Length: 110
Length: 114
Image 1 (tube, each protein chain N blue to C red):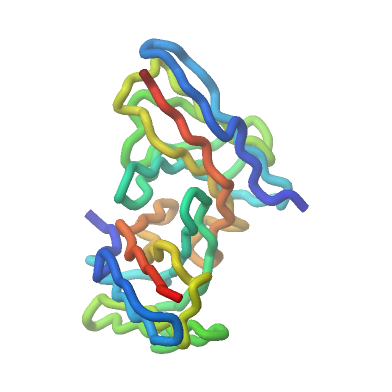
Image 2 (image 1 turned 180 degrees about the vertical axis):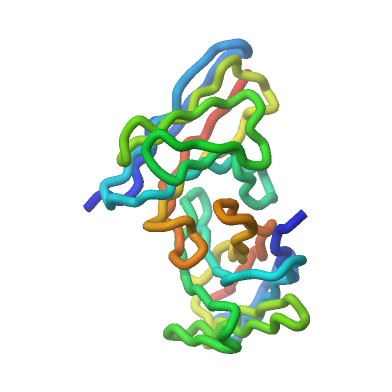
């Protein structure tokens, strides 16, 4: 399987705390992407990091990529109740196939 | 700009019935794909298309057909519905193959097969 796999499967934190979730994958990649899914909705693209990048920021999001360990992490700083959602990493595999992990379910308690 | 539009949002089918899930995008995206999402799981790729007239299979294509006669539309056909096809179906599109750009997702079709 080429999927990225997220860890932990579930995470519960208080509002204001930071949330960190990890993604591991199996093969070499061109880029890795993170998506958010609110309950009952489609996925929303958050951030893309290319294989030659080590870190990328977007607002309260910080993504790191370690290609030697085949892993990535997503950090959400100063979390809010509205950040409650499932987060997925996605790794393009072959030319036209794009795989998602099973996700980390984040619950931010007010 | 509507993005990716999926219809219907909900559907109940009887075993053996056939139906078509519609997907349309107005962003002139070349790449379109269908995923299914089962409870507590990620998304599994059913079929995808890199442009009008070109389609290919993903991880779980059995029981599903697709066609891409226009850039805008990518319908998914269930040939003979089975309870195992109960799932939430998402259509997604991208400017390119997804390798460089992110996907835009539709809001999903929740299908129940009884």
